[in-house]
Length: 231
Image (cartoon, rainbow, N blue to C red; front, side):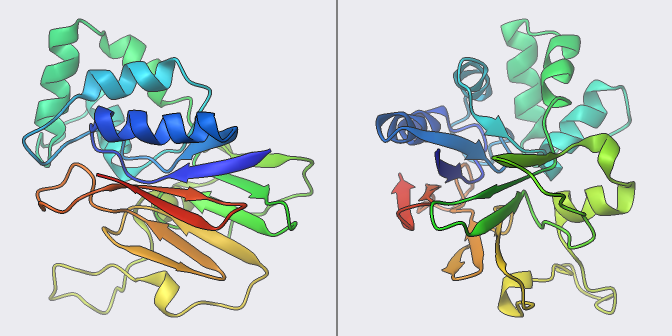
């Protein structure tokens, strides 16, 4: 089976619909890297995104924005900012219960592993597929579920590695693809508001749903090594 990997959506149902249509037309299994909701621009359609994905057979990965929504739905004290306030209001207005949404969101894996038609392995996570995750032999694909990993690894997969030495800066993110380790697989992520593709790294977050005027949703057609942008 071929795969189409889709980057951060952030409540843009129009771009998501176009990306899913591309995957269906080309008989590709869609993998979404997370951040389904929490628009930071004028347009937000969280319910449209929810309905599209509930009706699809797409694989959806956990992410930092979804993790915060999950904590809110569980009754934890979280700050409703960065688009989460809009998301919560949209689901409340649509009459979708916390229980229904929580059940759906918590069913997602943290990571997915598969091989392309050349037998090259791809390891997908929202921000970073940790090398501390043991990947066993598998037939077609392998999923990393919540109970398989500890909190430290889950945080790495949701938020990515950080530089602990940078204590006096707001941006402690480590852009892991800039200093690649030697490995025989491709690491795939969204999360970083950038697009970068090389022989061992695929980062596809085009800023969809963000405040920048030139934002787009990325789709990476794995077997054809083709990047599509939906505006």
